[in-house]
Image (cartoon, rainbow, N blue to C red; front, side, top):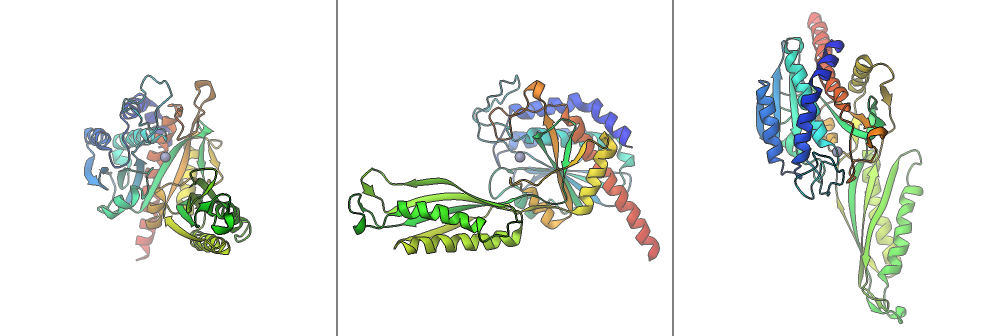
Length: 405
Ligand code: ZN
């Protein structure tokens, strides 16, 4: 079966590239993926796959019923682009000025359609149902995944496990990265207003200086990470913006700070947010000022389940050889695929697409982000193979437990 899947994936590469380039030329921002959805729906319909539209606003799903009835496996791709002015110089660069598929979601959709093509060709060998989930707004809080789940993306038919992938230039083409357990971080936005009392820059004793408080507060907040956290727990707090004051000789009334907290553990995440607020408020009050802390909750920690990750790792090894599949370190980026994994087991992995000779080395979210399209052979085959293998194992375990009754 792996040979069949791989040779089909090689055969359809030109189609996958064509779809990817079409999507790359017409990038759309979060929850605006209308033309994108239309293109996907028409590709799925052409394969005879039933399409459910209007899930999670601009999202959609395709349902392929295979030759057996052993369960339902979900495969997910994200659809949205970023507000970036493309600087790749590619012949198929964005025609929507200021919007760019700089996170590779065009390739995710194309590879998922490639997998749909492979699985359609092998329909009789698919021992269950495959649900192709195309999700909008991965890039923007609160994410498209919760809207998809609320609209029943994991129901009718009810999804037993879900798999997804992300292209990356951190790995060369031909390598895939896997990890069981936490793979990506939670990401919360923190907004702090430091309140002082304005006055003349030459008379600080008559004022409460929120700039000096902010300087102290920024350093003290780092002690939440360095002194209040278990050192074996990965976590980062970055204050990314600070705004205050208007002139050299005026003490302002307030200063605004904002930052991001990343964690790999939901328990520590909750605790850290409390400690951040407490530390900030105590620091400001210690100087006679005050402080308001607001948190905009982002995506949770992405936790891959063990057996589904092993299955995906083994599928890659069987398809592309033992050296292709690698166990990778977690990273502090965030991904709303985490929400699906809170509902059903599954796994999310990296597809390498770096190629120095082609100049495909810039990271995701860069205006010069490029990928080696040869990577699509791996991505499409991997998704198709994981779907069949998951359903096959479910079928086998169902039969086994059936015997016991
Ligand atoms: Zn992305």
